[in-house]
Amino acid sequence: MSKRSVEQISEGTDDTVAAVLQSAEHAQVSDAQLDLLLPTDGFEVLRAPSAALDVDAFHATCTHEGAVQVRAVLSRQPELLDARAPETRWTALHAATKSGQSDTVRALLELGADAAARTWHDSTALHIAACHGQC
Image (cartoon, rainbow, N blue to C red; front, side, top):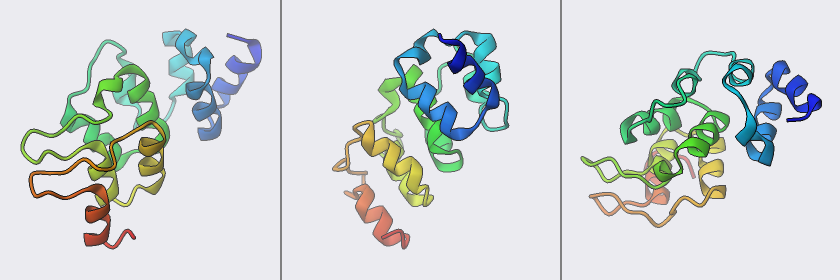
C-alpha cells in the first residue's frame, strides 16, 4: 500500500474510505490500518475480520448504516449481496429501499444486486419504494 493511501486512511473521511475500498489496494489493508480506516461507530461488524455476518445482520447494516459500510462488508462477504432473509425472502436491496437509504441502494445496484428479486409477497425493491414513498 502506498504511503499516500495510508495517510488517506488515517484521515478517515467517507470519500477516502470509499476510494480505498474500491481500489485494488484495499485487499492489502492490515488490521491496524483497518482500525484507522474505521474509527467511527457503525463499523463494529468489520472490526473482527473473521466474523461472518448473517443475512439479518447484513440487512440491518443496509438499513441503518451507509453505503461505505455496506461496500466494506460486501468486499469481505460478496455472497450477501443477494442473500435472502428466510422469513420474507427480502434481499439487502429491499431492506435499504424500505429504509430510504438511497446511497446504499445505489451502491447495491452498482455492485450488481438483483433489482428483479421478489419477496414472498411478489414485491420487487421498486414495489417497496412505491409503497413507502421512496419514488
